[in-house]
Image (cartoon, rainbow, N blue to C red; front, side):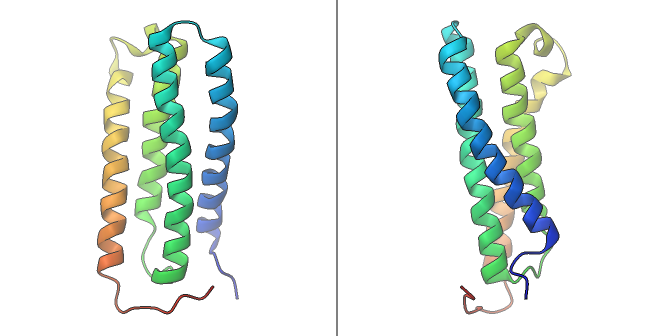
Length: 138
């Protein structure tokens, strides 16, 4: 019996990759960036990438154990999209602010942040509305 379905395995891979990448990018930001404002943006993006990477692992584990994959993993999908929009554009803005300022890309971090919030609340609703308590299969 498989513990994770194929899509959940993909989310685990994304979560672990986000954590690993955040470590490498944090080192780059600390040693290569000199502007304190850009370094602060970089740090915020890295912190969210790392935290949401761990968060994605938690969501997948909870879904697999307590929800038995009975619902579509839209919260996980929204979380990944939120990380890409929020952290991705903040990282880009830290490297090349002129690419982000003054165009539609400047709207991506707030939209990504909203998707992060929605993903967590959506998962909470799914968890609270599960059909019955399921015994953990660990």
